Length: 177
Length: 170
Image (tube, rainbow over all chains, first blue to last red; front, top):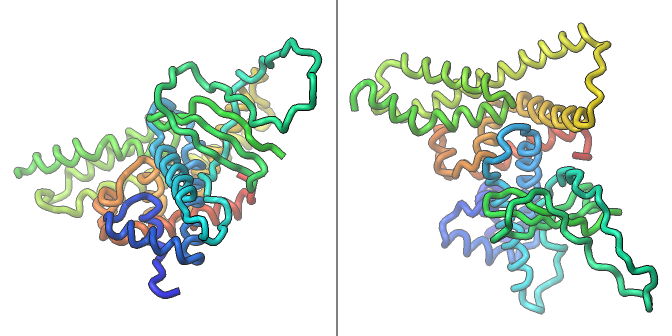
């Protein structure tokens, strides 16, 4: 397709590092060009993976904001909104790219299972929704973003509640097969 | 700007960031500070510092090169130590496994970064610290318009080398 964009421009678009004009032009192009939108998703997923890997390798200074995660949260939110706003007649595309990060091992807080007193159920229940969120710390959550992350090629998916400082405060597993 | 003002300004604006960049690379805050301080000492000895825009890029380059050298020599020393004390099987406390896994993750990233071109490693470390494209261009001494493509290449190279060494699973 003509007017296709270079990797450098698409990569800058991932980080929101373009002028508003260029951003609009690329956004419009991505609507129409499957090659560029696939390339864009690839760059976005790789960037999320690289910075998650570098970040997870750190064993020190856990209190510092993780800005790549804030960026990934914004990216995931933007992709979700863009997907919702797609016109109905738009060609069906693969699911929007989710920030592909390795899910950190949940702390041992999950070790106390909730025991439900109910022994009988009146009727078969519909498929269960995702698990409840498990808190990863005790910080009060006032404003936060929910970020869907996946690992192992989508076999493991989870939602993270990410605070404004970029730290994950809670997690729930939505798929583990 | 007199001879010490340019240095003070550069130190104020960039010292903490250089320490963080090295801390991310090395996982050792003390060694990161030592190397950063050393790089800024060398900077102070540079002649004609005032008005030289390239000195910001220079001090980051000196710091990342010294950091990568230290990572490689740390790795060599660690291998020697491991060979010497291979019978020591570590503690049995419950956190021991988690600490070992965290250390393994850190070493994998270190090894891959150390195998990249220093400028690629520097870009990834600074970007993971949240540096904007304009700041990246300044600290690397490149055009702001080149940051996206250089970042994309550095990330691709990081992923490729990581997967070659450690396979697809992360």
